[in-house]
Image (cartoon, rainbow, N blue to C red):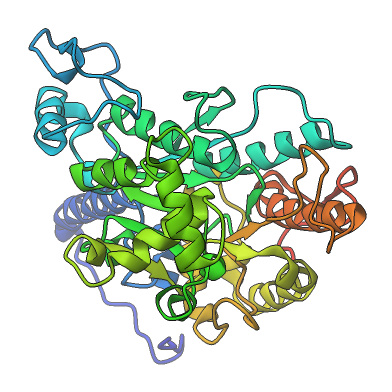
Length: 433
């Protein structure tokens, strides 16, 4: 900043008859300054902080208000008596049907190409495991928190939409019905009841999936070369709302217990993948079998981040991850800035440059996106014998409280102990400076 010396600065003389002119010019100049200030303020309410924002920040713009009270009388697929929601009724020309609906419902069309709808669920009867219902309530609330932060919708299903598709197979009719019930959504994201979203800021990079219609986490070598049903996990997957996906669900369901071909597929799966006909084994077989044709090239086994991460390798790293994130915030003042929960995505974008060396997946100090407690069976309590009930419960408490801290911080509180769900502490201003 340039300094001015009072001794070297000489006040100019002003003739008396010039004063009205100068006064008028000052009024005009001052008005222009006020206009410029308020114009900038209208455009950017946090203009004073804008120099801290990265130029690449393309923060989500909210959808225009949906018109929820308009359903034009023009006929759509909903008016066809032969069109159904059940998985045993094939749907044809879905892309065209969906496009007609969007054209008639104009308020839903903007940004429909990346709109996400989350589907999850549990059994229809009370849990028998200790604290099972409470744990499922918390895992559902975790997903609701994520949806609220990112503006997503969610459907929680706890009924059997097809009584002939028990267990994990039940996700197929739920996903299928959701695709039909929500033509405004481009992507359906299925999440098992025992999954926890452990990075509440992270957004799925849908721009990287333009050529894909189905995405899930796994290890390609395990599926394509070793033919292992454990080379992937269908507890968390993304499926595009399109005809291709309906065809995939038809093929997948044809391998399940409701199909007349069930016995045939049981033999094939045992021969090829050395495992019985679970929903996951059937999916692994389809991905392996279709890998070389055009249909299979629409399926992606994601390896770049934890779209689904196995809990045993994650829960004991959460304390260190918390400390590393706090170290970053100690250095970066903008990440400590208190803000409304509605603008949380902005701070996720701001954090990314500080995570460029954090890595991903195993050994990383980046927050895992989704942690899956496969084998813990929190509702029934019949966990895999290689685990203990206490180990599963403690692991879920850590993950849920770790995620909860990211939410509660927007409300001024935090769990100091990841194993203690009931106690929170208020946070001082400018924490953790």
